[in-house]
Structures are given as structure tokens and as C-alpha cells.
Length: 456
Ligand code: SF4
Image: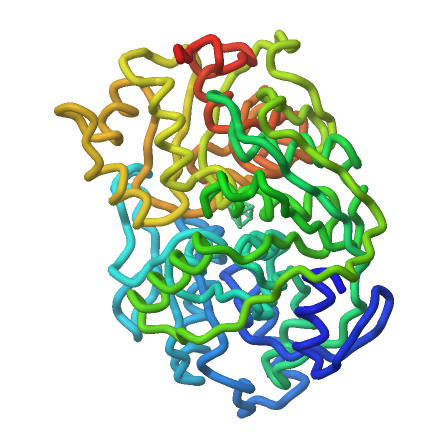
């Protein structure tokens, strides 16, 4: 069995499963956020009753992150609906925007978009927050009401996005009927060269199979090249499995996975036990692809979908905007690579920076290079950095969302999705690239290979 099949076999209490089997899978964690949480709660109450209790209060994680720093009253109300449900159900894992458990969330636009407007529990973008807060464990099943839930596959778990109705069923029963996906094999060899990042790996893979090339399939990433990838790198790769239509992305478990997970579970006092799944000799894949990381070059996914692959060095597209942020591209390591290229220079176009989580804001504001913090280096380079960590313009959002494209323009972005209208105006064009390529392009105002700014 493949990693995904082994994991699903265990989660369904069977000795073996194979692709195509329909099985009942036990959930270890159900995550929801402010966009889908209210709808999920509505279906849960309608189907299970107004006074029904969730199947296991310690397995529900609620993370408001999408439409948060906006004056849109309906978006603010969504966060209040989550808070009411958490109070009613006495849920321990709620990463609220405000500290008052009986309060109401209102964004104060008069304070501006840059200075932080959240309390001490707020955790930022759900997929980056889940591992930071100790909710991702190898061998487990994570369901989330968000398509990029697959990011947690970096931790050797089965993680997939589900709709509100399915999520409501999981809330009530703790299980879900799933068809076991076929598995595709992506074997990684070699090591990334300077200027090339994990984002380039996944853009290369999606370009190879197309934006629907993995529809309802598991994308298994393994091989000797994985050892040189950090957990942040693996998260970037697994995150975008859905951009090829994948049901999930999954990595092998190793010492790095263990160190990360053990540290985070201990730090947050979450469940510390887990049982990884390992590869065996009986794996059957429907697709095989070997990628030599040392030969990979900075890659861009062009408008209008993540499968439109080109090399950055072959492009000469004039840009209006650059954007770094999101679960995929707004991690500390992403900003460090971004800052390495911008350090001592100045951007030529509007450039927006949105860290994925408050912890990442703190990292950047406390990490010194010489006498300056990384945060200050980015500000000096002309990047508009907000402390209001969250999804922000990655998915457009209400018109007052930081970084949203409200007019037709061309933007290079470290985010993960570029279908028309994704980041705002439906006539805008979004080019997906690594933080390094976004930085180099911000400096020149054209899509630029970051190796032009790297001296080895
Ligand atoms: S940052 Fe973007 S991709 Fe990630 S959860 Fe938010 S909207 Fe979705």
C-alpha cells in the first residue's frame, strides 16, 4: 500500500484498502474557519439538533483567518458566530481575533491596515497555524473546510479539504465516507540550487501534469531529495497538491518531522502521541515522476491557472504589483529569502507583505541582520508590511482588504492560486512564483529570475 492507503486503512480499522474502496474514516482533527465555519455550524444544528454536542470537543479546531481585517460587518459577524458556538460547545481550541470571550469583533479602519489589531490568542492563517499550535501529527487524519488543508500532508498525515455539509457530519459523528484515492508518485532527488525554492518544485510538478492532473488522487512526495527540504518547504509543496486537483499530498516521516511535531505539541500542550506511516514494498502508483532538484530553475505559473508553467528567465512581463503572503508563501523562511534579495535595495512597484501568522510577524521583528530587523529591512526596501497576519488578498476578500487588486493589473505573487478574480479584480492577472522570484521581480518591475541578484 502507498502512504495514503496505509493511513486510510488504519483510520478505517481495516488491514488493507485499495484505490477505489469506499470506507468510513475516523477523523483525528476537524478544522474550520470564519468563511465556512458558520455554514458548517448551521448544517450541524439543522441535522443533529439545536442542542447537539460535537463528537469530541478536543478534536475540533477553529481558526478565524480569512476575512478578518475588514470593516465588512458580515465578515466580522462570522467571527462572532464562531465565538458563540465555541462558548456553547466549550471548545478548547479556538484562536479568536479578540481576547474577550463574550465580546464582538469589529475592525477599526481608522487605525489603518498595518498595525496589529488582534488579541493574544489569534493564530493567523489556519494551515500555518495548525502546525505551529501543535495540531498536526503524523499518521493522523485531518479534515478541514478549506481546500489547502492538504498542506498538513507535509507532516505525514492524511489531510484534505471538505465541504460544509461533510464537515457538519464530521462534527456530529467524527467520521466520513471516503473513496480511497489512487496515488501518484513524485520522487525527489538532488538538492535545490541557490535562488530556487520549494515553490519551484510544486510549480514544476503541476506544470507537468496540469491543474487537473491529480484530480481526486494522492500526490506522494518522497526520495532522497526530501531530506534537504525543511518542514516549511514540505508544507509549500503539500499545500499546492490541490492546485493540481489532488485529494491530498503526503510526505514520508523523518527526524525533521519528529523534531517539529514533538516540539510544537509540547509547547502547546496538545496530544503528543502519534504513529507515523512508513513506505513498504507493495506500493502501486498510477503515475511516476522523478525530479532532480539540482536541475530545477525558478519557475512561474502564468495566468490563468497554476498549471501554466514557464521559466522566470524566459519571461519579460511588465508588472504592476508584487505580493508575498498566504499559507504557501508567507512563512518565516519565505520572508527571509525574500528579504535576502531585497536587502539594501528598493522595490520598483507596489509590493505588499502579509505574514501568515502573528508568530511569523514576531520572528521577522526580532530577527536581526546587522543592526536592523528583517522587518525593518523590508520596510526600508519599500515593502508595505502589515502586522495583521491572515489570508488578506490571497483570495481577494472585501474591497478594503490589504493588498487586494481592485483594478485590473498584473501581479507576481508568492500565493498558491491564480484563477481569474482570485486576488480581486476579475480582469487582473496573477503570476505565481517563489518568494525569491517575487523579490527579484519587485526590484525590476518585470518577471525576473532571482539568480540575477544572487552571488554564490
Ligand atoms: S492564505 Fe490563501 S490559500 Fe491559504 S487559507 Fe488563506 S485564502 Fe486559502
